[in-house]
Amino acid sequence: MNQPIPASQLILNNEGAIYHLNLHPDQLADDIILVGDPGRVSEVSTFFDKIEVKRQNREIVTHTGFFNGKRITVLSTGMGTDNLDIVMNELDALANIDLKTRMPKEGHRTLNLIRLGTSGALQPDIEVENSFVATRYAIGLDGLLYFYEKHKEANEIALRDAFIEQMDYPKDLPLPYAVEGSKELFDRLGQGYYHGITATAPGFYGPQGRTLRTRLAYPEHNHKMEAFNYNGWRICNFEMESSALYGLGKMMGHNCLTICAVIANRVTEKFASDYHPYIKTLVVNTLERLSSK
Figure (tube, rainbow, N blue to C red):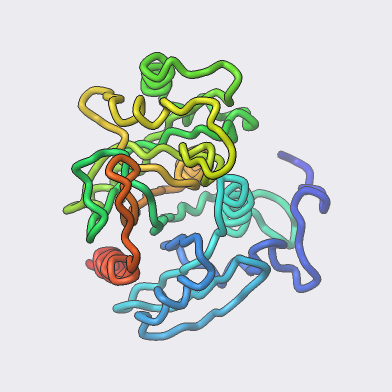
C-alpha cells in the first residue's frame, strides 16, 4: 500500500487515538489478555504490581500495567465475533500502522493475544466445577473470515470439511471455517487443562441450541457436535469469540490462544451458579505462566 489509509477506514478520535479502543500505540503491551466482560478487566489488573494506563470507551475497557515485571495489557472485547472484528483490526493498527502518517510500518510487531472467558461444555465428562478448556482449534459458525481475502491462509480446510460432512451441515447456514491457534502459546499456557476444539457460535441462544419461546431449526446440532471426531480431536465447548480471534490473528501475524472456564454443561444440563473462584484461578495461572522467564 503506497497511499495513506483514508480517514473513513482508519478512524481516529480527536486525541489521535484509535477510535473504538480509545488507545494510543504506546499504551499497548505486546502481551494482551482479552476478556468479554468489562467488569473482568479490574479483576485481572487487581493482581498487577502497577497499573500505568486506564482507558475506556463504550464496553471496551483497557488496563496496562506490570505483573512480576512483565508488561501486560488486559482489555474487554464485549460479546461476539462482530466485536472481535473491531478489536482485532484496531489492535493490529496500533501495532503495525503509523497513526500519524496512516501508513503501514516497515517492520511487523507481533502481539500475543490470550482470551480468558467462560463457555459451555459439549462433552458429558467435562465437569462444571474448576474445569478449563484450552482451545487447540476453533470452528467458526459465524462466517466472518469469508469477508477477508486471506481467509484461505487461515482456514484449516480438512478440519472444516470433516465438520461439514459429519454434521451434514445445512446449506442455508453460513459456511463454517476452522483455524488452529498458536502452538507456542498453547504449550506455554494451556497445560493441565482440557484440550480440544471450540465451536464459536454467532449467538447465545438459538446458535448454541438453546430454546426459550422459539423453536430451533436444527435441534440435533449439539448432539452431532458431541459425537464429532477429527483425528482424535473432539469439540469440547461452545463460546462466541475464538474463531474470529484465531482467524484474524493468523491472517495478521499474531499469536492467539483461548482458555475458558466451563460454567455449564450442555449435555448434563449442569450449571455453576458461582463460577467466580474458577475465573480467579484461571487469571492467576495465566498471569504467572505469562510472566515466567
